[in-house]
Image 1 (cartoon, rainbow, N blue to C red):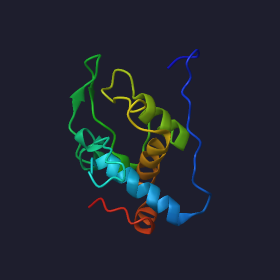
Image 2 (cartoon, one colour):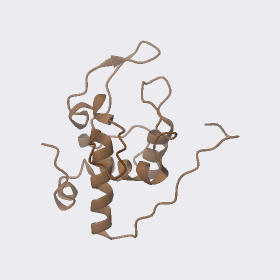
Image 3 (cartoon, rainbow, N blue to C red):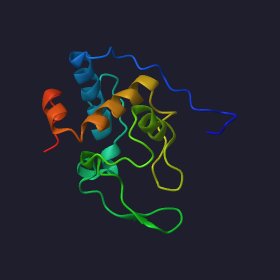
Length: 137
């Protein structure tokens, strides 16, 4: 996307401090991330194909410039490009040029992208994983 064609960020639909709705969003996001066919709409992003074991066992690969890179370990909580949820939304929506991170903006709805963001954002917080019933072991 460019200045002439900015990313349209979908409105975030979850009310603040509603853990039940957040947990449902996280569950859908995990289903998208893992390619689980149980997703309510049958959609799959299958992020685990590169972010093996949520990034903890991701294999090294070469980017478009020949640099050895590794898909992000989301459980570590280090996010290049910003940790704000909207920054993560941009990366899921548009991918990361040259890195091999594909864009999902034409495949997933805005709500789907927010579900993936909610899931990934909470992976690095063991207390939130427990509260939201995220199993990554």
